[in-house]
Length: 150
Image 1 (tube, rainbow, N blue to C red):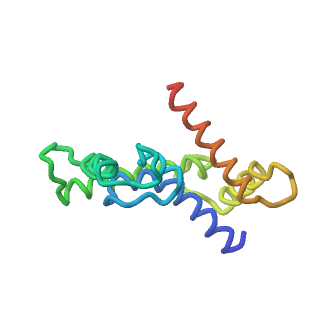
Image 2: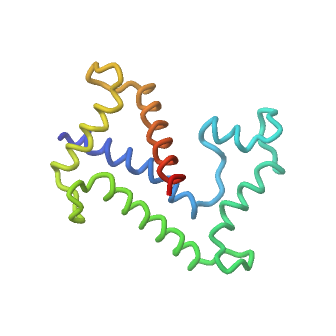
């Protein structure tokens, strides 16, 4: 596998894990239209302070485990550590096919091949942006179904 393909897999894995790391992130304006629309409660095409403040507070103070309305360094560290542990476990669950706690080059190659093959719905040997989005949405739906079944 080329370095470029390896970086792509690591980037995809990192993007997929970003949601977990967002738990300890400082408030930020939405980066996608979907996120923007979720915050724009009155649907006027703008996010005002009244719409954004509760979202920012929920995100940031969600790591306030002792509920003193203040987030300490220790609470931020604990949240980041928990998110990193979830990310590590997700990476191993996805790529470590033989469950030995390590990801071999063969496992990485197999994962990438399955991902590209699974996303390439028109079987042309490549994945368009549209196919990638559809594949990602299907993965999320599957994950949600597994979560709700448990």
